[in-house]
Length: 122
Image 1: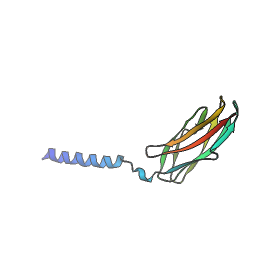
Image 2: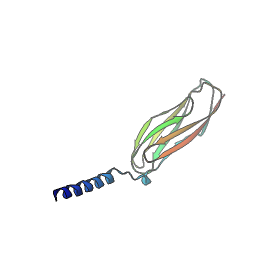
Image 3: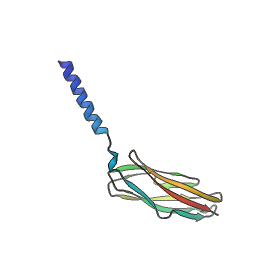
Image 4: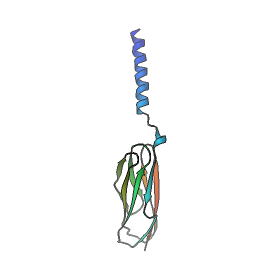
């Protein structure tokens, strides 16, 4: 009888714990906006593009990253409450001529938002 009671208590505790740990992603929504989607520069001439990330859903922590040559983003991580917005800064410092793209990504467990920046280096 004691073993049955313990088993039921463990099952109940396990179900409650799983419910507590499960994350409902349908209420997470953010946008990543850049002031420009295309920029021209010269070799050795650094350029800054500003933008922002805005949280339209539940509180979330987003990791910011860039896929592209000679491009960095700051900050690398933001925690935003619902309705909050934070500025982001993309710095371009090219060393070769050509046309490039940089994919700016903000991601968390529940979402992945992207913006593309086209870069023309003369």
